Image (cartoon, rainbow, N blue to C red):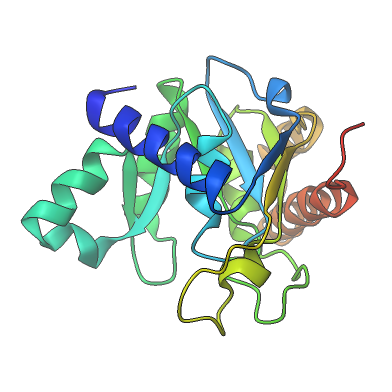
Length: 212
C-alpha cells in the first residue's frame, strides 16, 4: 500500500468499526498476492471501500472517468488505485486497464449487477463481468455485503449507523469456459459471458452473513 492508500484504508476501517460496527468474514479466502477479481453485490456507495477495508492488501477500484478531470480528486483517485471507466462502467479503454492491473498482479473489485440495487435485493448479473473474467486468467472471489442498503441506500441522504458486514467466499475458477471461449462462435461466446456472470451471482447469493 502506498501512503495515501494506507491512510484511507485505516480511516475507513476506523469508520466501519465504530460508526457501522462492522463484521468481516472469510478474508482468508482472498489470495494475498497475484491478480484476483472481487465480485460483489452492490447496494450502496459504502460497498467499494468496505470490500477493500476488509483486506490486508490493496485493491483497484472503478471510478467515473469524468472525476479524473479535477486535479485534486484525480490525483487522490489515482493514489487509491482507481481505474477510470465511462458512465456505463465499461468501454474498451476501461477493460484494457482492468486487464493490465490483473496481469500485473493486482486485485480489482467489480459489480456483476452493474449498478446499485434499488430495493436492497440482489439483481440479475450483467454479462460485462463475464467478458472480463474470460479475457483474464484471474480467479474470482465472490463477495457479499450486508446492511449497506439500510445504512446508506439510494433513498438515504446521509449514512445511518446501521450494522454492516462483508463476507468473502471461496475463489471460483473458469478454466473450462475460458478454453471453450477461445474457439467458439460469437453466439456461444455471448452465452459464455452471461453464464459466467450468472454463476458468479449465484455464488454471491449463497454467502451468508455468519461465519461458516
